[in-house]
Image (cartoon, rainbow, N blue to C red; front, side):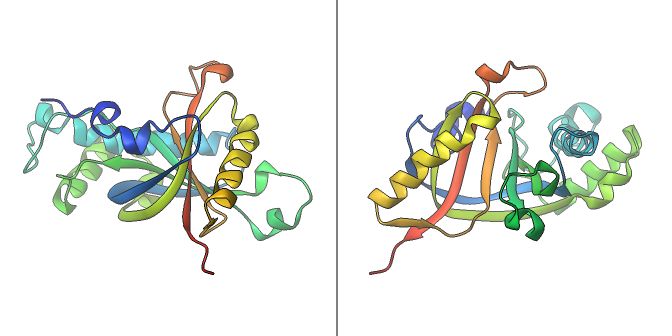
Length: 209
């Protein structure tokens, strides 16, 4: 049976439109770092190189290579961890040119180092890209988080973050970091801003008395 993250892992990817606590386990990702405005060309190129690797693994059986433990699955959605440069933190307004981000695409549990090496070979043969040298394969465990489904334009996210902050105050929690994760449930290149769906997630811990 095909593994579909929307059905099999709802607790991670389909939270309600009000904040909830979630325990996020270890997950494996292709990841690439970047800086600057997400509306720029560099951001788009970094997304493309991640997908070239993700689909290299997804299509391996059709290209004559069967990873150990392979199973049919839907490619996971694009994610990004966001923060600001030191300069950006000092400004009294939000300057998108001062964004720091790590773009990520989760990989299935069967993916090991050998599969990753093969994915890089396939992606490089299909379309050589110098950004492949910046991609890493890493395991990351977020642990206890608060997350919410934000529906609508990205510029309206402060409203959802305000709801998260109220939830933290009401439940004696605080953020472990100013960084936050976004998971993009639809393709922002093809979706009207009003119909965008984005998971907003913050790592949290209990406030000590």
